[in-house]
Length: 212
Image 1: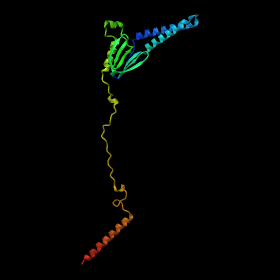
Image 2 (image 1 turned 135 degrees about the vertical axis):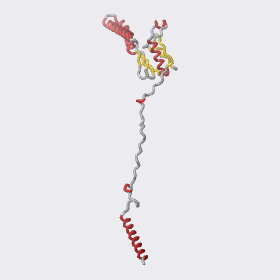
Image 3 (image 1 turned 30 degrees about the vertical axis):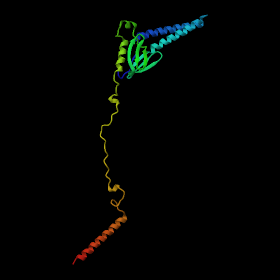
């Protein structure tokens, strides 16, 4: 019940009986309207037919629309003319009565759910094992349940792999811009060559001078 909404409607037999009565009222209303236009002096039946048509439509709407839905965190009460959404945290009590479920709310007037009614006979005899009593108990139990947390499958998983570090690139002499230590231009090479020749000549002269 925590994840799936549950909807309660009037018992099937009540809905069938109410629908048949509503259709009968609508048929009688049509007869009154037809007689009002076809018979002499029958205009007095027109207001009666219109009134019966309205009553029949009201009962049809009540039978097909009334319901109580228990969602994850709210109670949705759908009456004949209006729908109310009550957070479960605001519900202070639920009781079954012949007029419907009486839902007490925090700092709000009592709300009546017409779809679920307890018979007058059960109230007089003190019977607490009716369908309406069971629904009231389910609503009270849902009010005290903890709010469900998202399942692990719904929680985004973070990567557990350690961050990978790219190896630092060793910059070789060929990758650098030409400098005095990595690359030598033509002018510098000629200068060094001249220095080397001068050094060799000096060594040669020193060796000749030192010989006897």
